[in-house]
Image 1: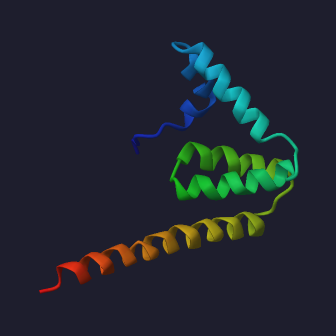
Image 2: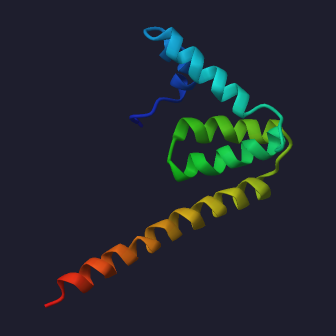
Length: 110
C-alpha cells in the first residue's frame, strides 16, 4: 500500500541540511542538546518525545521514538501510558476551546 510517508525516508533526515547546512547544524545541535541526559533521563525524554510524536501525528517520530524508548529500557506499558497522557492533553485542549465557542455563541445569541 502506497503512503505519503515512506519509512525509508527516516534515515535520510540529516539530508534536510544539504541546502541549508548552517541552519541544519543549529537545529541538530539544539536537538541533540535537548535529548542529552539532564534533569530528566534520556529514557524519560524519549517517553515525552514518543507522546508528543503521537500528539503531532508524526509517523517518522513515532517509529524513531518507539525504537529509542525500547533501547533506553522502557516497556510497552510505559510507552502506552505516555501516549494516553498525550491523548488526554490533546483531547482536553480541544474541549477547553469549546469555551471559545460558548463565548462566541453567547455574544451572537438571537
